[in-house]
Amino acid sequence: MLKKLFKKTEKVTEEDVFSPVNGKVVDLSVTPDPTFANKLLGDGVAIEPSDGEFVAPVNGKIVNLFPTKHAIGIESEAGIEYLIHIGIDTVTLDGKGFSAHVKQGDQVKIGDPLVTVDLEYVAHHAKTITPFVITNEIKTIDKVADQEVKKGATKVMTVHL
Image (cartoon, rainbow, N blue to C red):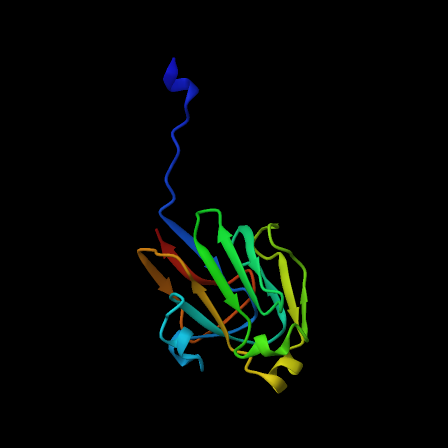
């Protein structure tokens, strides 16, 4: 009788992660910021965006949206924490060229709009390469490299928990 009351739940062992923006994936080591290039904040990929529409790469919760809107923290349903850092030296823009569509605490699904960026403005004042990293400890990551990606549709990482 008790067996019927409790469903067996499967433990999640991996999580697929999709591109937050259209563009080209490159190795994180080419990022012109040693903090990201040396993986001091975590491992992941970098993306050279081809447009300024950034979307949720996983189902989860917005845990941090910097006041300057250049960086977004998302915790996935599996408990993995991701940081999308839009551009390098973009914090100095103080939010100019960025428009947020979410706020801290919002639940998001893959493909939901996060931030729109005036890519031309950002490229004129900073670098557009976007580090996309995992900030908590995980087992391993399978990453794609040197390929064109579509926001919300192309898998860029599989995280093994």
